[in-house]
Image (cartoon, rainbow, N blue to C red; front, top):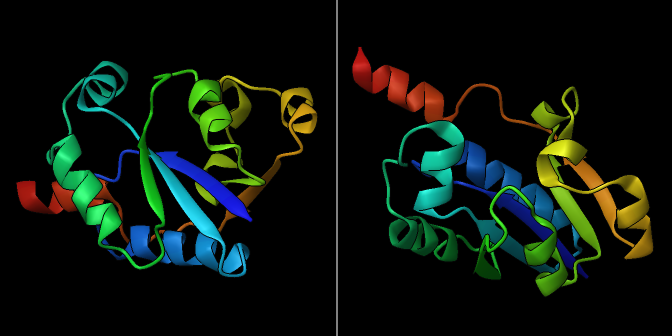
Length: 140
C-alpha cells in the first residue's frame, strides 16, 4: 500500500513525526511518500521562503523512520502531477484541513480521486506544536 502526503515540513518537529507515524500505521507497514514543496513554491504560496532549505528539509524527512521516499512537488498548487507520479492508494492530510476546501487547495475533486481509486484520509493534527508556533516562540 502506498500513502501520499504533501507539505513544506519546515522546522521539522514532533507534530510532523506524529503525523508521519500515523500515516505509516495507516499503510500497515507499506510505503509513505512525502511530496515536498520547493522553496520557490513556499515563497509564492506563503509570501516568504521556508527557514530550512528544500535539501535540508528533504534530509530531515528521509531521516524519519516512517518516510519511505521524498518526491519534489512538481505541480506547485496543482498536486495532481505529483500524485499521479506516485500512484498512491491513500492521500493523507492533517485534520486541520477538514474544515477548509482541501480539494480546491490540492486541485482535484472527489470524482478525480474515485477515477484513480484513491482514498482521502484525515489524520489527527497535533495542535500543541507547529512550525508557525516555533517561529512565534523564536520571536519572543
